Image (cartoon, rainbow, N blue to C red):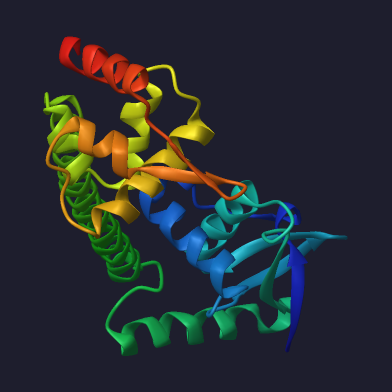
Length: 242
Protein backbone atom coordinates (compact mmCIF):
# COMPACT_ATOMS: atom_id res chain seq x y z
CA UNK A 1 0.00 0.00 0.00
CA UNK A 2 2.76 2.49 0.87
CA UNK A 3 6.48 2.72 1.59
CA UNK A 4 8.19 4.97 4.11
CA UNK A 5 11.19 6.68 2.50
CA UNK A 6 13.53 9.63 2.60
CA UNK A 7 12.89 11.66 -0.54
CA UNK A 8 14.87 14.49 -2.09
CA UNK A 9 12.81 17.65 -1.47
CA UNK A 10 13.62 18.95 -4.96
CA UNK A 11 11.91 15.95 -6.54
CA UNK A 12 8.54 16.76 -4.90
CA UNK A 13 5.87 19.22 -6.07
CA UNK A 14 2.53 20.40 -4.71
CA UNK A 15 -0.67 21.40 -6.44
CA UNK A 16 -1.34 23.90 -3.64
CA UNK A 17 0.48 27.23 -4.20
CA UNK A 18 3.08 28.29 -1.64
CA UNK A 19 1.33 31.65 -1.28
CA UNK A 20 -1.46 29.84 0.56
CA UNK A 21 0.74 29.79 3.66
CA UNK A 22 2.39 32.49 5.73
CA UNK A 23 6.12 32.79 5.04
CA UNK A 24 6.68 33.50 8.73
CA UNK A 25 4.89 30.26 9.62
CA UNK A 26 6.90 28.34 7.04
CA UNK A 27 10.17 29.81 8.28
CA UNK A 28 9.38 28.95 11.90
CA UNK A 29 8.43 25.36 11.08
CA UNK A 30 11.48 25.03 8.79
CA UNK A 31 13.79 25.89 11.66
CA UNK A 32 12.07 23.35 13.90
CA UNK A 33 12.50 20.70 11.18
CA UNK A 34 16.23 21.49 10.96
CA UNK A 35 16.67 21.47 14.72
CA UNK A 36 14.76 18.22 15.25
CA UNK A 37 16.21 16.41 12.24
CA UNK A 38 13.02 15.86 10.24
CA UNK A 39 9.25 15.98 10.07
CA UNK A 40 7.25 14.51 12.92
CA UNK A 41 4.37 13.96 10.49
CA UNK A 42 5.73 12.57 7.19
CA UNK A 43 4.36 13.78 3.88
CA UNK A 44 1.96 11.60 1.93
CA UNK A 45 3.07 11.61 -1.69
CA UNK A 46 2.68 9.60 -4.86
CA UNK A 47 5.04 9.04 -7.74
CA UNK A 48 4.12 10.82 -10.97
CA UNK A 49 7.17 9.77 -12.98
CA UNK A 50 10.58 8.25 -12.20
CA UNK A 51 12.08 10.23 -9.30
CA UNK A 52 9.20 12.74 -9.37
CA UNK A 53 6.44 13.01 -6.76
CA UNK A 54 3.39 15.10 -5.88
CA UNK A 55 2.00 15.86 -2.43
CA UNK A 56 -1.36 14.31 -1.56
CA UNK A 57 -1.43 15.40 2.08
CA UNK A 58 0.83 17.65 4.13
CA UNK A 59 1.18 20.66 1.86
CA UNK A 60 2.22 22.96 4.71
CA UNK A 61 4.80 20.44 5.87
CA UNK A 62 6.08 20.17 2.29
CA UNK A 63 6.61 23.92 1.88
CA UNK A 64 8.20 24.05 5.35
CA UNK A 65 10.60 21.33 4.18
CA UNK A 66 11.31 23.38 1.04
CA UNK A 67 12.08 26.38 3.25
CA UNK A 68 14.32 24.20 5.44
CA UNK A 69 16.23 23.14 2.33
CA UNK A 70 16.62 26.82 1.37
CA UNK A 71 17.98 27.63 4.83
CA UNK A 72 20.37 24.67 5.00
CA UNK A 73 20.86 22.70 1.79
CA UNK A 74 22.67 19.83 3.50
CA UNK A 75 20.39 19.28 6.52
CA UNK A 76 17.21 20.00 4.57
CA UNK A 77 18.07 17.97 1.48
CA UNK A 78 15.84 14.98 2.30
CA UNK A 79 12.34 14.73 3.78
CA UNK A 80 10.57 11.72 5.26
CA UNK A 81 7.44 10.68 3.39
CA UNK A 82 4.98 7.88 2.76
CA UNK A 83 5.04 6.97 -0.93
CA UNK A 84 1.70 5.36 -1.71
CA UNK A 85 0.73 3.19 -4.63
CA UNK A 86 -1.93 4.41 -7.11
CA UNK A 87 -4.33 1.69 -5.92
CA UNK A 88 -4.21 2.94 -2.34
CA UNK A 89 -4.29 6.65 -3.10
CA UNK A 90 -8.01 7.19 -2.42
CA UNK A 91 -8.05 5.19 0.81
CA UNK A 92 -4.91 6.84 2.21
CA UNK A 93 -6.17 10.35 1.43
CA UNK A 94 -9.53 9.58 3.04
CA UNK A 95 -7.75 8.28 6.14
CA UNK A 96 -5.59 11.40 6.36
CA UNK A 97 -8.63 13.66 6.05
CA UNK A 98 -10.53 11.64 8.67
CA UNK A 99 -7.63 11.96 11.10
CA UNK A 100 -7.64 15.72 10.62
CA UNK A 101 -11.30 15.89 11.57
CA UNK A 102 -10.74 13.60 14.55
CA UNK A 103 -7.90 15.77 15.81
CA UNK A 104 -10.12 18.81 15.47
CA UNK A 105 -7.61 20.81 13.48
CA UNK A 106 -5.91 20.78 10.11
CA UNK A 107 -2.43 19.38 9.86
CA UNK A 108 -1.29 22.62 8.32
CA UNK A 109 -1.93 24.50 11.58
CA UNK A 110 1.43 24.92 13.32
CA UNK A 111 1.07 28.47 14.58
CA UNK A 112 1.10 27.49 18.29
CA UNK A 113 4.49 25.77 17.88
CA UNK A 114 6.10 28.66 16.02
CA UNK A 115 4.53 31.19 18.38
CA UNK A 116 5.90 29.34 21.42
CA UNK A 117 9.35 29.18 19.81
CA UNK A 118 9.28 32.91 19.14
CA UNK A 119 8.18 33.59 22.72
CA UNK A 120 11.03 31.48 24.11
CA UNK A 121 13.53 33.32 21.89
CA UNK A 122 12.14 36.67 23.06
CA UNK A 123 12.45 35.63 26.72
CA UNK A 124 16.03 34.49 26.16
CA UNK A 125 16.92 37.75 24.41
CA UNK A 126 15.38 39.71 27.29
CA UNK A 127 17.41 37.76 29.89
CA UNK A 128 20.58 38.41 27.90
CA UNK A 129 19.73 42.12 27.61
CA UNK A 130 19.03 42.38 31.35
CA UNK A 131 22.30 40.59 32.20
CA UNK A 132 24.32 42.84 29.89
CA UNK A 133 22.72 45.91 31.44
CA UNK A 134 23.54 44.61 34.93
CA UNK A 135 27.17 43.99 33.96
CA UNK A 136 27.37 47.45 32.36
CA UNK A 137 26.08 49.07 35.56
CA UNK A 138 28.60 47.13 37.69
CA UNK A 139 31.39 48.12 35.30
CA UNK A 140 30.37 51.77 35.52
CA UNK A 141 30.33 51.64 39.33
CA UNK A 142 33.74 49.96 39.44
CA UNK A 143 35.20 52.48 37.00
CA UNK A 144 33.80 55.33 39.08
CA UNK A 145 35.35 53.96 42.30
CA UNK A 146 38.72 53.46 40.59
CA UNK A 147 38.69 57.00 39.20
CA UNK A 148 37.81 58.41 42.62
CA UNK A 149 40.68 56.51 44.26
CA UNK A 150 43.12 57.59 41.56
CA UNK A 151 42.01 61.18 42.03
CA UNK A 152 42.61 60.99 45.78
CA UNK A 153 46.03 59.42 45.23
CA UNK A 154 46.88 62.16 42.75
CA UNK A 155 45.72 64.86 45.16
CA UNK A 156 47.83 63.40 47.96
CA UNK A 157 50.78 63.02 45.62
CA UNK A 158 50.53 66.62 44.44
CA UNK A 159 49.82 68.03 47.87
CA UNK A 160 52.65 70.25 49.12
CA UNK A 161 54.32 68.80 52.21
CA UNK A 162 57.05 70.26 54.40
CA UNK A 163 60.41 68.48 53.95
CA UNK A 164 60.64 67.55 57.63
CA UNK A 165 57.10 66.12 57.55
CA UNK A 166 57.96 64.17 54.40
CA UNK A 167 60.91 62.45 56.07
CA UNK A 168 58.82 61.75 59.19
CA UNK A 169 55.63 60.48 57.53
CA UNK A 170 56.03 59.23 53.96
CA UNK A 171 56.44 55.55 53.18
CA UNK A 172 59.33 54.16 51.15
CA UNK A 173 57.72 54.35 47.71
CA UNK A 174 56.48 57.94 47.99
CA UNK A 175 59.61 59.19 49.74
CA UNK A 176 61.77 57.51 47.10
CA UNK A 177 59.69 59.13 44.34
CA UNK A 178 60.13 62.55 45.88
CA UNK A 179 63.87 62.05 46.28
CA UNK A 180 64.24 61.16 42.58
CA UNK A 181 62.59 64.50 41.74
CA UNK A 182 65.71 66.19 43.17
CA UNK A 183 68.08 64.43 40.77
CA UNK A 184 68.93 61.39 42.92
CA UNK A 185 68.91 58.13 40.95
CA UNK A 186 66.02 55.72 41.49
CA UNK A 187 68.26 53.04 42.98
CA UNK A 188 70.00 55.46 45.34
CA UNK A 189 66.69 57.11 46.32
CA UNK A 190 65.25 53.71 47.31
CA UNK A 191 68.29 52.95 49.48
CA UNK A 192 68.05 56.35 51.22
CA UNK A 193 64.27 56.03 51.74
CA UNK A 194 64.68 52.62 53.38
CA UNK A 195 67.45 53.96 55.62
CA UNK A 196 65.22 56.90 56.63
CA UNK A 197 62.37 54.59 57.63
CA UNK A 198 64.74 52.35 59.57
CA UNK A 199 66.19 55.30 61.50
CA UNK A 200 62.72 56.74 62.04
CA UNK A 201 61.97 53.75 64.26
CA UNK A 202 64.33 55.28 66.80
CA UNK A 203 62.13 58.37 66.98
CA UNK A 204 60.92 61.16 64.71
CA UNK A 205 63.39 63.58 63.21
CA UNK A 206 63.35 66.93 64.97
CA UNK A 207 65.12 69.00 62.32
CA UNK A 208 66.57 68.64 58.85
CA UNK A 209 70.05 68.65 60.40
CA UNK A 210 68.89 65.77 62.62
CA UNK A 211 68.09 63.82 59.45
CA UNK A 212 71.50 64.53 57.98
CA UNK A 213 73.24 63.44 61.18
CA UNK A 214 71.21 60.27 61.86
CA UNK A 215 70.72 58.77 58.39
CA UNK A 216 74.01 57.02 57.65
CA UNK A 217 75.49 54.08 55.81
CA UNK A 218 78.61 52.08 56.45
CA UNK A 219 81.39 51.96 53.92
CA UNK A 220 83.81 49.50 55.33
CA UNK A 221 83.95 50.25 59.04
CA UNK A 222 83.26 53.94 58.65
CA UNK A 223 79.72 55.40 58.90
CA UNK A 224 79.00 58.16 56.40
CA UNK A 225 76.09 60.55 55.98
CA UNK A 226 73.69 59.59 53.25
CA UNK A 227 72.25 63.09 53.07
CA UNK A 228 74.97 65.66 53.47
CA UNK A 229 74.26 69.33 54.13
CA UNK A 230 74.53 70.33 50.46
CA UNK A 231 72.28 67.46 49.36
CA UNK A 232 69.73 68.35 52.03
CA UNK A 233 69.72 72.01 50.98
CA UNK A 234 69.12 70.96 47.37
CA UNK A 235 66.22 68.73 48.46
CA UNK A 236 64.64 71.51 50.49
CA UNK A 237 64.97 74.06 47.64
CA UNK A 238 63.37 71.78 45.06
CA UNK A 239 60.57 70.56 47.34
CA UNK A 240 59.72 74.09 48.44
CA UNK A 241 59.42 75.21 44.82
CA UNK A 242 57.23 72.24 43.79
